[in-house]
Image (cartoon, rainbow, N blue to C red; front, side):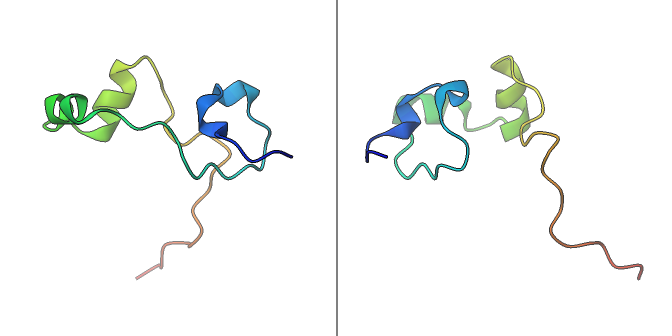
Length: 65
């Protein structure tokens, strides 16, 4: 495996199990424009749904307290 910027490849093209340490970052002007919105709002406005995906499960179970 070569060391490169796996973050540059579309998610479907990235091999499973790869840790991306240098993902592309949004510019400061874009971050400032979206600062007042929640993560889920921006995520859905981009046309995406299911931010974390159905395969992820909580690591801790809620207590019955």
